[in-house]
Amino acid sequence: MKREQNCRGCTGGHFKPMSRRGLIQAGALSVFGLTLGEYFTRTAKADGVVRTSSGGGKEGKCKSVIQIYLPGGSPHQETWDPKPEAPVEYRGPCGVVKTKIPGICFNEYLPKLAGIADKMTIVRSIAGRVPDHDQGQYHVLTGYLPSPAIKHPSMGSVVAHEFGPKNNLPPYVGVPSVTTNGGTGYLSSKFGPFEIGVDPAQKEFRVRDVSLPKGMAEEQFTRRRTARQAVEDHFKSIEADPTAFDTMDAFYQRAYKLVSSPEAQKAFTLDGETEATEKLYGTDVKDRNGNASGIARRLMLARRLVEAGVRFVSVSYGGWDLHAQVKDGVSRQLPQFDHALSGLILDLESRGLLDSTMVMVVSEFGRSPKINTDSGRDHYARCFSIAAAGGGLAKGTIYGSSNATASEPDVDPVSVEDYLFTVYHQMGINADDRLMAPGDRPIDIIRGGKLVKGLIA
View 1 (tube, helix red, strand yellow):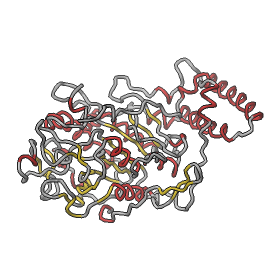
View 2 (cartoon, helix red, strand yellow):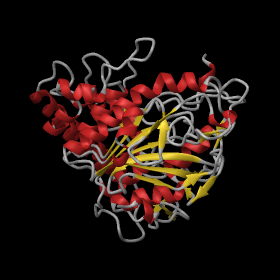
View 3 (cartoon, one colour):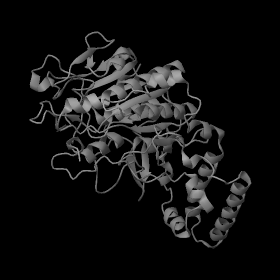
View 4 (cartoon, helix red, strand yellow):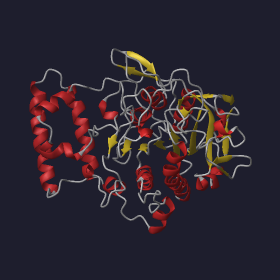
């Protein structure tokens, strides 16, 4: 296994995507597809989650979020916060490129993003807390540190809970899947992600679970639906607590709508994309070994999904645990990322969607200030960067700063909780509100966070 995929002292596997497919899938409808054992097992987790204060359900300026997750801990020094004036052991081996914002540079492998930096919002003073992959990922996706007592929901699941589906589409989608801590936590499984389970970069890409099984006609589909309903009604009549059935029925109803929805059929494909759009995202951009990464088509699909009504799309890309040869790692991955992300931002803007769609690039932490003996950087949480665009954020803004070696926030530190609180605010969610966890335990959506007004347009 390559060195960059393993941490010193780690057992590995800490940024493998979840293998669980979302429950809203027509694959689960094959002969209504679950065995009775699976059916009863899954119904055991009923909803039972209620809001304890007002404020949910009213959309804000930001209608959708595309969260781009860089697993492993991307180096802030080799992306958004280079230090060209620092001593070489801090500066690192990469050069820089000037951006549209006077006096601001990005890494040399981000020239296209540098050219549209006036449309972006970069926070260079994120103050993290733990340099551990799993805990850092949990923190940046939920706003909490892990607890043995309870598992908190990710932002995607909270958004799904607060707003629900739109245009018969799942509110939360993973492309191709979500990361380990991107799940529902104490919320019901029905607020979990729909994971497409296949990379859009593959030839003849199709999302299997938003179409009828091959050879099944609409009439057959309707008959099976009717038969399943009859079986369920029978068991409801003899079951002491029918609420579990009602919860499972919600899964089925969402699946039926997804399979039969023209909006979903269109949104979950890349059919009809023009050659100009493909070029904008850089679908033809290869790494130095001639390989395509898939990030271009993942982001194209993400745009189609939010355009159709999906509220939260999570996209993962690359492996950034660069303990060794940091320049080699970023030079392999950043050029395609640069092309695809700049293409997404420009595409959203041209379609009138950028103001209502926030694109957010996050990782679990940054990397150590000094280059190590393997020409890499180690885990580091005390200071890192988050990049974003759209969603009502202030354009062309570099918020906060790190010190001369990118080792500490120097001006306007922003906690992870503050940043997520601000994103929720832009979506119309008051993160001071509480959701009820099992055991009638009210829990703040974000605890201890505050609005960062300087990030808002």
